[in-house]
Length: 257
Image (cartoon, rainbow, N blue to C red):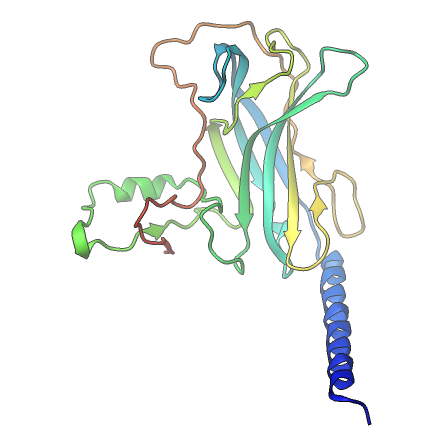
């Protein structure tokens, strides 16, 4: 007869083996789910300004402010094993030295959550013009009778984005401190699929079985202009993010509509 400790070890070992096999089957089963991602990125406006790109910057330097249009259809990236997709748009431009690789800087990102993922304030909420129009004129609750805030739903299917004249979330700076008159700049879309079980999957442009490479996702080449004066009233601020409502102290947690 085995002791109680040995029996517990055998049961635990059998349980972990079964759990590992089930997790492996779930992770491998995603390869039979077709993926056909597509995207379109277009430059809307670019300016180079000399100043302090961040409130914590201790010196003035050149930084670029890029506005863009983005249309994506990443709905096929979501399957039974997808927790969330980290989406980002980066600017790629040549380095000042010919023997060094190009510089890359992320100007915008978003976390696209699946329906099965629990709500989090960092999940991206697509702007909804209709929701803004209908919300105008509605009275806001005060005091104890204040209603619980509602997280608006996306006007488009999951993984589908349609952004026009989108402001960046991050300014572009360079280690050299100079950006004006740089050429061959391109905007490129990328992502990282974070599954419930298995390895992380990055954006690819090659076909792998039922997984098709990204179609589009790159803008036409452009150049950083010379430093220009900021016209009065012109907005060169960054996007605060379309994540869930960031609550103040004592605020209630938003709920989905």
